[in-house]
Amino acid sequence: MRKNSVKNIRLNSEVQREMSQIIREDLKDPRIHPMTSVMAVEVTPDLKFAKIFVSVLGDDEAKEATMAGLKKSASYARHQLAVRMNLRNTPELTFVLDTSIEYGVSMAKRIDEVMKKEQ
Image (cartoon, rainbow, N blue to C red; front, side, top):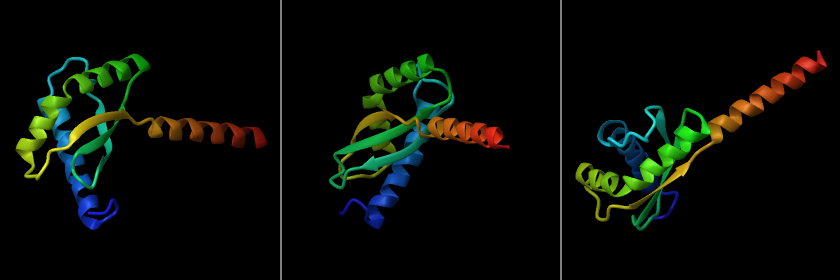
């Protein structure tokens, strides 16, 4: 299975949907912020590893605590993923903080500031 094959894309979206539910419903770690979203998932073609890109709405302290909680509960989340999905191999989960939304918002603010100065 190639990285950009239809099967891999479909698998990524299915894992993203399931991980979103697992984080929202099954993980009971108090460090995990309630406004945590799974933005994207990249599963390797051999199904051994998966990068879960997570966005957290909150300050830097909440983000650090959420990432620590997710890292600590990765094995439980992997087990839940194995129960929910029928895969040959259940991938080892790695959580990555995704700051693309915040970057986009800051760039939009900068553009607005430049546009106001030009008027």
